[in-house]
Length: 416
Figure 1 (cartoon, rainbow, N blue to C red):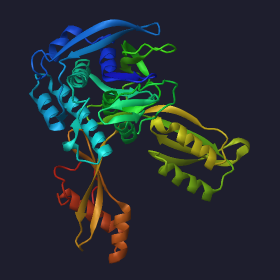
Figure 2: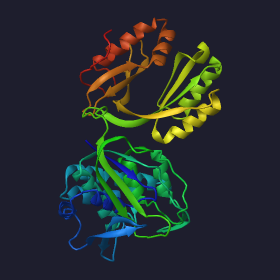
Figure 3: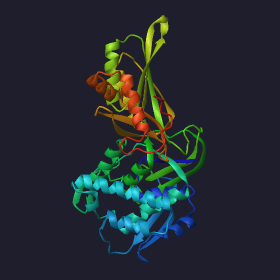
Figure 4: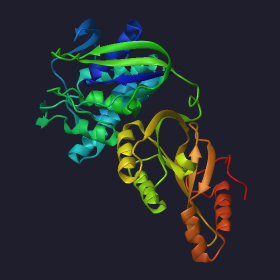
């Protein structure tokens, strides 16, 4: 399995990300041949890839030369170009996902449906080549999962089709917010994260923060930006490698990186601990558990353990330090293997509805299902029934296909 870590200490743009893949080992001749399959008029663009140096770092630099006259395009037009292109199916899917994410961000900014968005700069040929070219390279390198650093956005103003806007531009800011990307401060005095760069990264990156543990590094690439500022190398670095363990690499289930944050508590009241746990859930914790333990001097205490996304670590640590009596936390990265989760509903014999949490693998097979206890308890109370009978009926209804939108065999559900 190949995974990628996009180290974007100085920002990112579409051409920089493509250049980084080429620098990391993407075969240029194969990539160019695939690029010729994009459904654009002959002669509408020309690509050059050159060696470059940014801040003493040797890198590759991609330049896309296009015809002077460019046209605005809607998402449907770009989808048509991608659909008609003679490129791999996986590259088509990824490229369309990137453009769709970008359209949704623009739509949110302008208060219109995504289908009504007119791409100006991003609808130009060079942006299409950057995004589709990245998707082609990503598919060729057989990257199965990506991770990314916190992103800088720069400062100042940027000129757009609609006039001057502060950096980051509205679409970039929306992309970062919707994907929960951690943003770091920097002294960069220009727009260092472009809409195409942000759209690509927020589509492919699974989690943000520190690099994942690698058993082996297979490729390192540097993609150069057009600017060559003094004081820092204007590059994106990509590291390709194999994960350090086989845990979590499954064709059936999604894998991701997470962080466990822990603290020992030996002088904290149960009431205040319950409140702290609720605050942690509200702050975005993926899981919170409290385990009894014997602390120093034989004192009875608890171990507070929180699983969270890498980008949420600092917020979780600060919350634990401010809401509990601990004076320190510890953290470590882990791998998670997770099933897709969806809600379904079943109608019970007395007319009420109960939600069912359904877990599925990547092929859509149901691997587990559990009635929502609060729904079952409310139904049991209303109809004066034992809650275990309500749970059993909900499971039976789900198994016989009565759940809205659910079909197929139920695996792993307890027998009634």
